[in-house]
Image 1 (cartoon, rainbow, N blue to C red):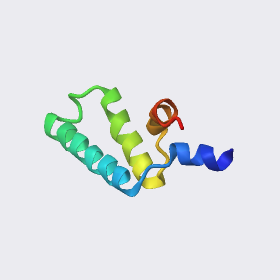
Image 2: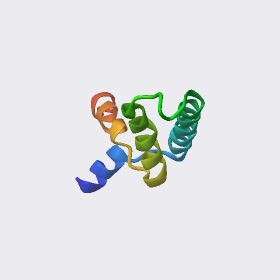
Image 3: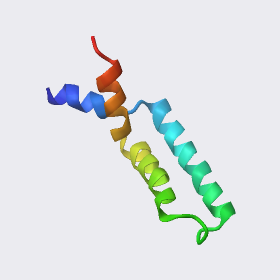
Amino acid sequence: MSGNLKSLFAASASMRLFMFNSSLFILLGIWLTGFSNVHWFIYMVPAFFIFAAATGLCLGLAVPRLIFDRK
């Protein structure tokens, strides 16, 4: 069960690169807008993406895999 649960949250290398690049573009947009002009919640998305890219654990992948990967 734990091996199956781990594979539920694991992101592939291409997904990790996508999340890292997306976080960089979001942070670039925040920088161009001005750090004091954006709401604090905007920082949550790049933080989660960088965490997922660094560790390979993506909590956002678990729910779609539970719903759509039924065998």
